[in-house]
Image 1 (tube, rainbow, N blue to C red):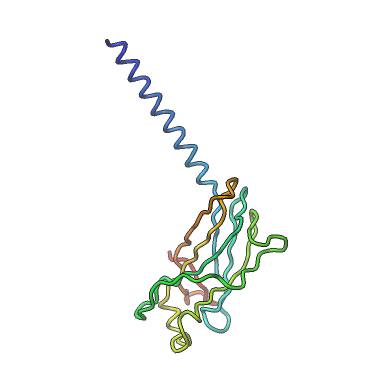
Image 2 (cartoon, rainbow, N blue to C red):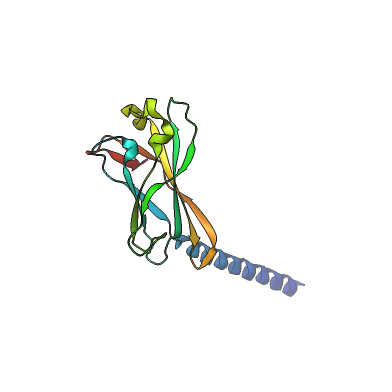
Length: 171
């Protein structure tokens, strides 16, 4: 009876080791997936909502195929404007890549936030300082082109402590 119990315990331990190994491999593959990285150009003139943003593929192995970028105005404090998702304008990929980013490549885009906010308050510079935005990227899964992934960036706020001011991620 003891031998049967030890055999069952050994089989249980082996099954747990195999499951842990499979989970580790899956986690490793998941960590290799490409994710877009976002940054802001400097704000030199005009509205902070008219800034050009940059998206970059930081993955050294996989492309961001069929990338679609959306801009999200998460909130504007003390304004009552609800969170709103709006498609990015003027997306400019590098030559030869119509809708995706190869490893290490970047593209630029703008967000039409001024039209979303409306004319009476979009000229107030304090509106941008009370705003929080983020970006949503949707792209095809590498090696399995029929599946789509979505990735939300970290929140960005208008940082006026750096010169020239720019949208930066929250610390």
